[in-house]
Image (tube, rainbow, N blue to C red; front, side, top):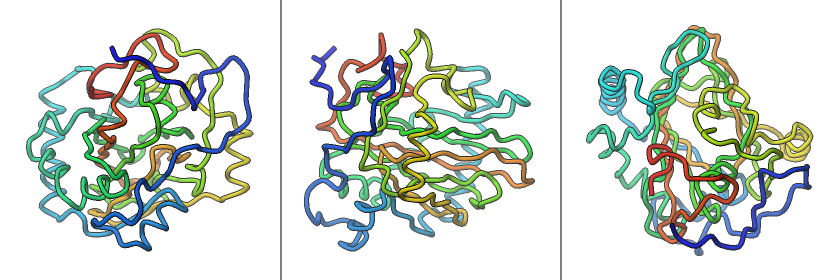
Length: 290
């Protein structure tokens, strides 16, 4: 293990502390060349996210759907497959870029990884990949959280020099559990109360409201009152790029229409993982590639 760094993002605490301003940049570097324009970079810095349409073709979408069906059938009850508590349907499949060469090639395209390199101003690697499936009538919610809070506490990611790319494999409607983001929340860090239990990672992935790593309702309310809530909708093939520290969530899906997305998390090479900042040991490699 590498030596743990001084912690500017304290979390998993015994008692609630105030929301703190983020000490690190959102867009690293200044006006780096890449897929995004200067104006789009400025908007990303302000809101914490960027959207684009037609990033995936119909053939790409069909490839991803076919690949995840093959992977799920092959893996069975492997720990990389997370199922809905309500009916056993697949909720998430992790490490898909390692399980499918076709998906890995999609992740390596410039309109996907190139945006991450531009924003993070560094070479990048895939910290985590997954496909989230929200089947119609049964897809469960994902409660309010900052991804970076978990990656920092449980994986040892030093600073939020990371971002996620969500590629829509189905239309994302406001009615089928589309992602909600509090724009501007990425510029503040929200520490969470409660010590990380041993062997906790599985529970956090299947729980609709994890008991640890969940912000106080008062903190979410404060941020939402200040910045509002954006619901990110878009057609199949569209993309959402969002900062690792955005406060976000999604509601359950009781509509007839599934909502499926390929998520790829890119971390800067210079931000390589160290020992977890608030957990006894690192999570498995399929959740946090080292």
